[in-house]
Image (cartoon, rainbow, N blue to C red; front, side, top):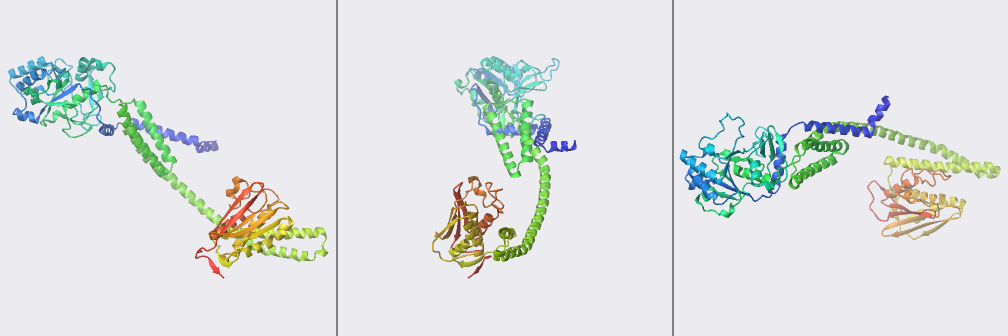
Length: 624
């Protein structure tokens, strides 16, 4: 049972399941945490990056400005407002919305009554800054006579002071309070019913209200006329015809007449009149940003968490950081594109927090795992190093200890064979077998010794100025007996060469190995061609046979240590798999190259290239 559990724990499916479970738990936990301030910041960032959206062309703003106060020697009085409204009505606007608090308008009772009559005649609607009073006995919100006869609709400005972003920024408009539509929703439905053929997008319930996000434009985007121009009658009436005119205050006299926006947190960022214009256009164009459901938001956070968990626990740190950075940038641009094209406001704070939490939660765990693996690798490497040293020392010891008795066996066999007249055929054959086997074993031990010297970096070049052709002839003499036994003809084509510096012992081993291999892997009665020439400062020696050839897929491995072709493995042809590896190493030590060309069934050609005049390493010793 325990073994079965361990097997399950080590399976990739179980590990993947654990990662998915962790990602879901983190995503679920993050989705329950409200981080409205960060979310509001991410929304403001997107709004600020996007170009200003189009307008309906149905709105016009009239503001009391500093110039107005200067021209009128103070803020407009009730008499000024009455004259203003009479002049404004001559432009035939579709509706007039006052976002100036009438309680702040100065005048006598009669002057205020004149203002009320002018407002009612012009059809002006006063935008109240408070919610409608549901208690008929509560008169605290009622305007005093004669202002109580004004047409008042509740149209409060919003600011995230105690909820959502809690930074005082106006981002939302209120559609209804206690299921009763307020100023913006009610007025647009009456004035522009053709714009309300479809349900409004982006609305969401909050406490006793239904709200939506405002699609903001930058300050100064709407056509604006100053109050004094309308008051004096010096304005173009065609500009106001059939427009919804919003009358406000932009004289920097009171902070109550301004709002902070996603574009700016300055206390005087935007006049309230422009905020109301943005609200009306948001409704008319039905472009209130839509917030996805909680389920979709959870799914996005889960996907981001899952990606982060897999990246942190599975990939290398640098690659993981690059992927997470790419994910962060890609998700940000994706959110920006969704808001611009489809008016969908994706929650960004929670997915970004998921990346942060997953990364910093799992990185310490990853570091612990990596340190543990590094320690295990260090221990294994230390053990392997010791084993390698023991193996090398053992090979050296055994090789040296074997060479002496082997030489005695070979010598005794050769001595007895010299008196072959005293031997019967069976004895003679047995002694020849002993002699040839001892020769093969001696070569194998020599290869092992050379390999041990390579592994321990003990081989140094012993350079001498020699003729390569003389070395080739000596090698051919040594191998002529093997060739005769198989009736193989060795054809020699040697160009005259100058003496060059090389290690005759090492290059001799290289050429001997190539010639012996050519004889060994060639059929009886075939030919072997050995040639030499000098081209472009290199001495080139080639050994070509008519043997079995080497499969194409094995050519790249023939110079690997202990490698033998699959076509000869298990056959009667003996070999250690070290000959070509040593040949390649010795040639490379001379700053040369060795390569092979082969056609299966037709033979192989080995080419050795040795520089004729190159500077050799300081470790090499030159002898004349």
